Amino acid sequence: MNRDLTLFPEDDIGNALWELKAQGTDLAVEHEVEFSVIFPSQEQALKFGHMLLENGQKLSFSPYQANAEFPWEITAYPFMPLSYENVVAYQALLQEHCPAFGGQFDGWYCQVAE
Image 1 (tube, helix red, strand yellow):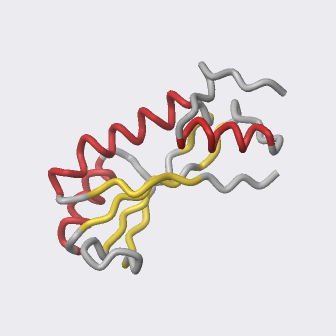
Image 2 (image 1 turned 45 degrees about the vertical axis):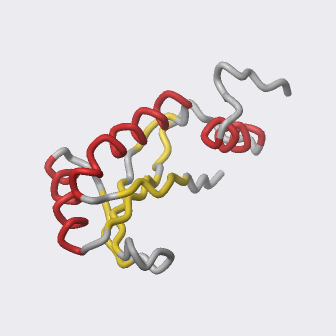
């Protein structure tokens, strides 16, 4: 299978999507994707989470053990087809809004059950 670099650029997102496709995942089907943002305080995390809830987002809130300076995590769970454009756009949206709450984008993940 040849990799189309316009659909799967050679970066972290393109590589992850390419790996999912190589495993047989139907990327055109909507999947639940986890996007995490970490925060220095519980209050800041909850304010960011409240904003996401006001915009109809499913989310979770939990302590985050991996970074002592950012010990709180909000994870949003949008459903979307797994295209490069969709993942980049949602990540950019979070990165645009989380600094106002002291947050830092921490990555995305998609558990695919086939």
